[in-house]
Image: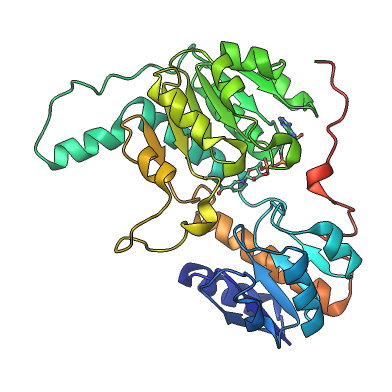
Length: 347
Ligand code: NAD
């Protein structure tokens, strides 16, 4: 029994091996740094399961290949499953399990870190001080107390984010087709247009599916306050990059902090420091003084890694023992996210 682990980095191997030993999983892991694509799928030829991350591709053709190899399980080391063709996976009889939650606090805390790094220009100040420049010109920020923060998606991460921003003394607005009564402790729900118009800071915490793709686009950017800050630690595809660049150039959007990027699969999690990166939009963004881009690391804490690897190993045990799995996306009929219809909302 072998499990092919794609997009495997050293920091995960140690955690996975520890979790495997603790849980007594008999199957062994084969680690591959490359991501799962049509070119690398043959690495799973002798595997019973693949273990994958956010940028591995599990479309119909790759699932067909895995099926031919007799590889029948997809163990996601993440919550999102927008990279899996769930219709095809169900049709082919795959076991697909995710890690629905792993330290949502880690992601929310990171979003707050990005906001203050951008708002208070800490990243610019750090560079200056290293060059012996202690001038304050250009480093002016705003105080968060009393500012309006718009939260798009009040699920696990959005709620942690709301709790922290409430602590800063911010006024909180939220938009979510499925409202969560717990949020009412911190703020009020409104429609997306109103949230965009009133917020000084907008933070995205909704999943990516067809209905949320480019939820931030030319039109919605136009509806934001001049000078507003946009934060995306959710999925890159929520934001239309070109429209965002234009809004920044027009000095309408005041700042952009993103831990995710819509074409990140070609660049993130690899060292390109001696390459020419061909993604012009990404490279342009890295030159703006009011933009911070990081490489999908909001989840990256000791606590989250321990939870991810433990749940992944538990999911693998369920697959091999053919026992019930609480995270089985096929049984949950969690398909297809692209067609997910939000519940009717009063807005
Ligand atoms: P969750 O499922 O608990 O919450 C998502 C919320 O979004 C739900 O309340 C849902 O009703 C809401 N939603 C759905 N459609 C919406 C829409 N059209 N507009 C507004 N809200 C909508 O998920 P979560 O655990 O809070 O995670 C949120 C997202 O964060 C994930 O989908 C994932 O993409 C991302 N994420 C990123 C990282 C990272 O390291 N950067 C780590 C974990 C998760």
